[in-house]
Image (tube, rainbow, N blue to C red):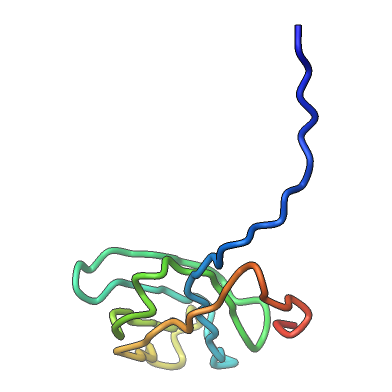
Length: 101
C-alpha cells in the first residue's frame, strides 16, 4: 500500500475572479445583487459595515451586468438602486488580502 503526502503546491497560473466592492448607504438594512440580464439573484445579504466586498465569477468583469439594490427595512427611506455595475478583475494568486480591509 502506498501513502501519498499532500503538500501545498503554489499555483503558477493566475486565477482570475471578479471582486465587487460596494460602499453601503448607512440606512441600508439589506443588499441584493442581481444579474440584470437574467434577473437571477446572485446574493442577498445584510451589511455589517460601511463597505461590502464579494468575490464574483469572472463573467461579471467583462460587461456591467449587475444591479445592486439597497433596501431600508425601517420604511423611512426608499430603496436605492445602482444599475450597470461591473466587478473588478483580480488575481487570487497575487491578491494582497490586507489591502481589502
